[in-house]
Image (cartoon, one colour):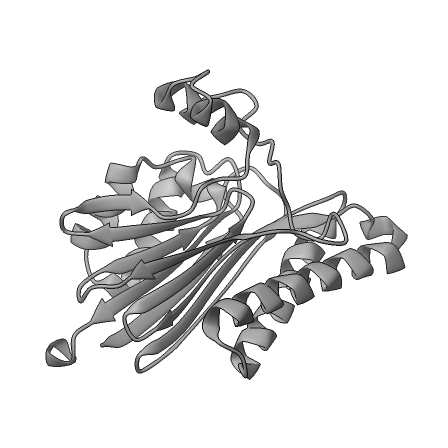
Length: 244
């Protein structure tokens, strides 16, 4: 199976700075995608997402460990890098970032997340959120205190319960997902998932036009809705050898 990948980010319609960061790389049956959504005073959010992205991607590209161990090692090193940078630079103290990343090897996607940036599996049969948000709203939803409809517009939707770089140690959730030919894997910041429904994400990715322009279509759709936050997407497509 062959994997292709693309990424794009936009400051949106409201924010003055883009605190999101993204990366994608694909070669034959191996691919890596990362999205980080930073937070902090002044420009600290931009710093947190950049430091996390650079550290995480470097560890993944160096390799040398089994995939699951490599993902957890990369998270640990990225967390340390952001945390230490904050303590060394007082104006950045307390900064942090979400992270969602996918390492695809052959037919297996190793998906890791911290915070509320998401990974979706998109197929002709439907769309499914692979990751689970680390957020107050997700906890209320799982406890049955609010409905999915209430969750979409909840006034405390921006409160996350876990972030990379705010403490010495962080735990991420790691998911193993089997990729099928023709499937797309979407990684995104909440600036995209807050603006578009799951059905809209699926339709834009699968039927909006060429896959290589998918990130642009998604971001344009979010901008048309007002894009109240930075908007970032990484799109990864699995192709069979016969499709090449």
